[in-house]
Image 1 (cartoon, rainbow, N blue to C red):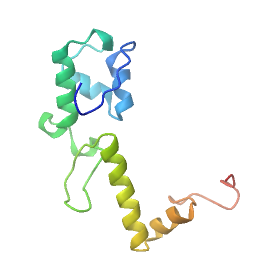
Image 2: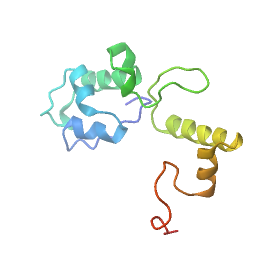
Image 3: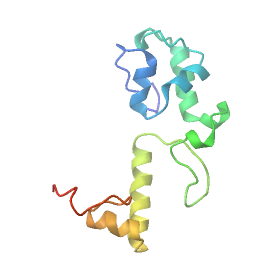
Amino acid sequence: LGALCFFFFFKQKPAYEILTCDWSSDVCCKKAEIDMGQRAGELTAAQLESLMLIVANPRQFRIPDWFLNRQKDFKDGKYSQLSSNALDTKLRDDLERLKKIRNHRGLRHYWGIRVRGQHTKTTGRRK
């Protein structure tokens, strides 16, 4: 089905099938003009192709920047929608960069403790 790796099980409605791709399914289905009540196994090849095109190029379909999963990339400053391995790679690179420059967030990731300001005195003691 292309390079985006849609994992359709063809048993549920397309909105719920797309949720596995970390995207808001309602927006994808509305942009592709797909009936929300239709099952994923009943989609035609053209409908699948339109879904893959929307996920690959969301900005061409007027999906707002705040909706994308890679906002304001550190290196190039661009907004983009990444999928599967590319997203994992970018996240790992960001954490390695934070550790390398000895940022507070990077150090807390390195030490394996809470990063986002949660209390740590009495919670999160499980290892």
